[in-house]
Image (cartoon, rainbow, N blue to C red):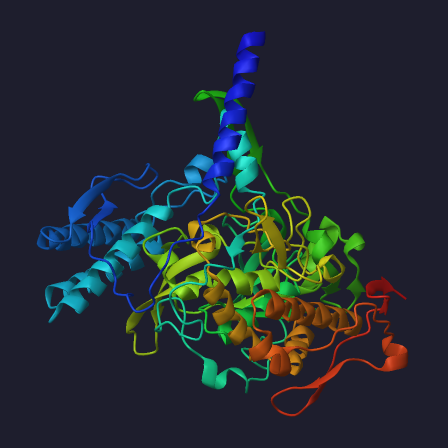
Length: 592
């Protein structure tokens, strides 16, 4: 037994060393922004087998896009008809949270059907292509759609853990991205990529937007209706509501401030992302299902193996109490009760529930086909994908991963459709993003003052090189796209970030529901992070005069003495950030 244990340790150590070696030199791969045509290599796509039934594991058939397009077209027609027939049966769907059941195929799923229709659209484009570029683009989109559908039926997290690989897992999930300053890349850092499925150049409008009013949306009625609970893989609870003619996702948890702020910044800089707004005191008509369905999110089952033999498992079941999110209960007779006064006896007399601060995500007619990964296709060769590392680090959004990304089928009022890669959940941020153990969101005290650092790396007996490391940022899901970020990518994104003025940052922070003191501190930390990037990304000569802003890290501020933070919205109305009994003492947020 002792020998076995020692052997395990030896193997683990060797794996650890090999993983360390594998991390060296991964940042020296040049990319050319002028070579952005979709690749036509290995044009094999994987589509659901027509024999696959709902509630079964998905089975697939491969098609060669160079030879099997007509066969693929017929295959998609059969799948669409089978989906239509099953939808007509209107069979009851299981509400089970079981991990394996959640990954089973569902022929009636809206996203799956949207994917099939999008494949049909791309086949039409491919078969009528007038030139090689149109053909390549259609093939690329077909691969993208097929991957998104496949991703629907796999776990959004790594759930099988081999004990001998733990050293590699530890290194992989504690590795802060590095950028070699000597390898700047082959492309000019000022070169914009062409508009893509993920990103659109918004430079002309960027500096003119009022970020309080930007994408601002509030319910058109005073009391909304409950629809259903959130049932995805996410950690944070919430539910879907109908407010007059509009639909929203109501979300609770620690992203209540960071979600509204981040969504404005990502969208302003050209990224496809949802419209998220802060709301306090939302009224929702009482429905008992609020309580019975509140913990409907999917469970995740983790398995640990040793030499491929199962040695243990863990089923993560996140449970929350809706009472913790209730501000007050309003009865039909007009009485107002607090959450602690709730009892089954008063249920029939409840008119509506008033909720504590939360976020509202505006729902659209767009259909989510399926998740996408930063590691897929040629994403790592595209600057707008690599640039996400720098922007996300600035915001503290460590949660850029497959389950928060979707390929969507956008539909306009004319019912024409278009594909987009969307960052559907950009809520994490404005907190500590520096390590696995300390990650937080909407935690302004937890934000570090810097997220980048330049250090001297000993490369020889008397030789050192400047290295740049994202010491204040650690992505939750490692990916090769962030590994390929070059200095010119960082400079490109920093130029975009520097187009956002301090006034706009304040506007977005006020819109996120923070107190006046928290707004002051968060703005200071965001500006200081950007200041440090100017130095670390070697852009002092270009950006020091236009972007650098002096920051007092030991700021003292009391809104009762110094006045509330005040901004103007797009209608020139004065908006004040609340007091919330918070002040700043030596750069720390404290209660008065």
